[in-house]
Length: 465
Image (cartoon, rainbow, N blue to C red; front, top):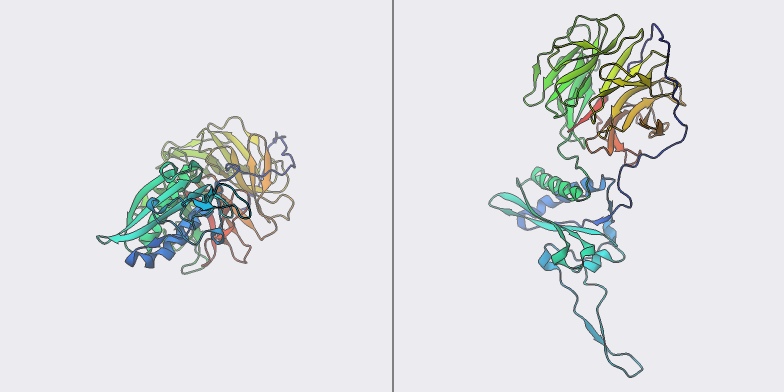
């Protein structure tokens, strides 16, 4: 985060204070259903691809806060591969010992893994079961996947998903069908899969370490690839709602200016930069037709909005202080969160898209920056030095309506640039907790922290669809 340098302080700072009460941001359903996902097997040549498949399927489901995976150590030794494998255990006739009486018909408690109660009862105690198998047919990898609701009594009634998935006969194809099966499973619980979503970030890993370029990777850190090659400073990326365009700040021509690239194919698109010493921190509006950004064209760095090619320029904010990092509410498209020094140290503010109804969101203590809206338009993730030394940022999440907040990172280096995933449940951010700046992800309650980058230094992640 580039610290604001305020040359003037405006009067009328917001007086709304946050409560000091910690809240837990829990956007998932409670209680979470228990899901059993045993390792699937493959027929013939497909078996060699199953390690990649099973690891991907488990990882995709386990990363969601909507479900709870039952550990595989609890599973029966025999696993069904298709619905016809399920067999109700035959009744057993037992004669009471030591006394006369009518023989009793007793149903065994287990079918060895081939009956639904083997999975719904102890020790597994699952609510749902995923199973299936893969095979290679006509040089195509085919996954036959089923998902059962174990509360429905019989296999004929339990079927929730019964689907065939096709892909290439390699590890990439195995991961693809695993991602697709996982997405269908998560959809049963109203959850979104992160498969296909992209993270744009800044990295200095190539060439001169003083130069920074824009990079892109898949949601799990795989497939990292370079987008820009300016051999200069390319920073502060933003990604369009449909993930087809990237906007960023570039120093390639001297003063910082806004540059827009298309993603596929990668090429620069036209954008008019007004004459100014600074044009920076771009952000797309939810419809993808406009850009909001900060510019010093008026003297002070203020918030502007323009069409996606830079035309139709309009100034939004007007104060004697530096104002940057505008972020439009993705749900309403009618309000902007931004960073301003109008009340002293940089704080978070919000205002309407026309510049009206300005109010401060953070209470004035410490320094706040990097606002990011949850897709539901209710929560803001941001960086804040509250309770820490100047410059030592941590990640917080605020309920904008109530001003209540929770702290997600604690005394683990510098933590900045949070950005919400499309599912509204995950956050990607930059952290120096391992020494150098790297990209990490976590759930919105601060758990399941995972490192996504490790080459060079990396900053400013933005999560797109």
